Amino acid sequence: MGQIQESLAECKKGNHKLIVIYQDYTNDENQPTVRWCTVCGSVVVDLDYDNRTNPGDVMKMKTPSIIQEIDKNGKEKSTG
Image (cartoon, rainbow, N blue to C red):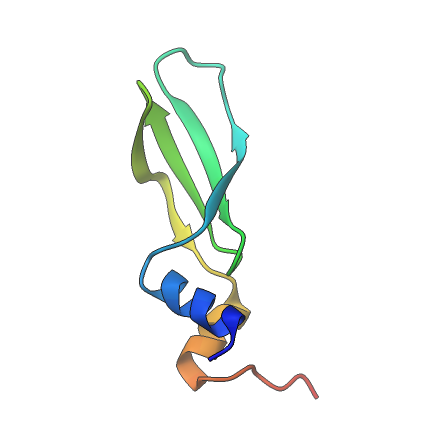
């Protein structure tokens, strides 16, 4: 299995490689935080407070439709 397929398999298990792409510091108590998976492109908006994360509190994980098609069909959808 290729490295990309292995990484996507990990994402499917919920082991995403998330990086913070935006954090709102306007409220002292909690910060809405946008995280993006560098492997599958999924995005989640968490609520961080006191250095703790409440996963998906603002928006649950959303996955791009191409990844959903790959999961359903086991291969990429033809574009032609």
